[in-house]
Length: 376
Image (cartoon, rainbow, N blue to C red):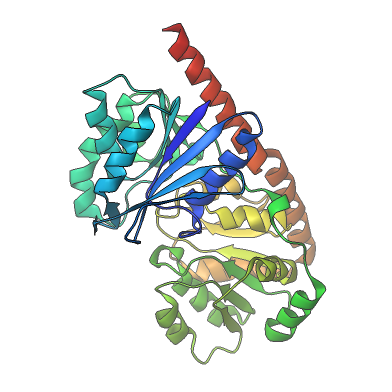
C-alpha cells in the first residue's frame, strides 16, 4: 500500500506538530508494509528528496510566495501530478488551501485514489482570508472519502465541521515514549541549578495564541516559580512583561535532553493557550508521559480532551490570569493532588495517546478505504 501525504511543511525544516504526526504514522505503519511519501514546500530554491529514518520519502518543493501564511509552489503541483499514479491512498492534512485546489481540479480530469483528510485546525487568525477560503474548504472536505478530527471536542465546536453534513471520525494524536531520551542526571543537575525544581512549566513555541502574558500575570500574582521554555516571535514582548519578576525564568533553546529534564523537575505543567489556534497540544501528551498534572484553558478544542477536568488536571476560563493563578496555587499547595492527577494523566496517555495507537487506527482506516475501492 502506498500513501501520499500532503501538507505545507515537515521535519527537519519544521519540527512542529503536523510533521511529527506524519512521521509517527509513517514509522509504525511502515512495518506493516505501508510505503509513505510526503509532499511539502520549502524556502530552498531547488527540489530535493530526503528519507526519514522510518523510510518515508519527503519531497521538498521550492515555494514561490506565501499568502496568509500558506506557501504556493508550482513545483508542488508538478510533483503531485507525478506521484498520483504511485499512490493508493491520499492523506491530506488540513488546513492547506493549495491541496484543496489540487485535489478538486484533479478530480475533474481523472479517477482519484481514496482520500482521507486529517482536520488539524480551523483557520483562526486570518479572518478575512477564512471568509474567502471556507467555501473552497467545505467543497473539498465534502468531496473526500473520509474526514478525521483529532478530538470529539473539535468536531463539536468547529463551525466548518458542523456544516459538512457528513460523519467525521476521531483519531487522537499520539507520541512515542521510546523516541525521547532518558533523564540524564548531569543535564537535570545543571537545569536544577539554573531554575530550581517544583516549578510550573510551560514548554512550546512562544506564539500569540499560547496565552503566555496571562501566565506571566499569574506568576506575578502568586509568586510561584514559573519556567517558560521555548522560542518564538513573542519572546521579546514576554521578556519585557516579565522584567523584574525573579520567579519567572526563560529558557530559549531547549534540546530533547533538556526537555525531559525540565519535565522531570517540574511540579505542574501549565498550558494557557486562550484561542482555538491551539487545536490539540502535543506538549500536553509529553507532560502526561512524565506524570505531571495539567492546567489548561477551556477553548473547546483537544486540550480539554487530553486534560480531563479534575481528573488529570484543572481547566480554567481562557484569558483569565486570576483563574490561572488560583489553579496554580491549588496544585502547588497540594502535592498529593499533583501526584494523583499526574498518575491519572499517565494512565490516560498510555490508553489513548500513544503514537502506536494513532498509527494502528490510521492503518486500519487505510485498509478499509482500499477495500471499499476494490469493491466498487
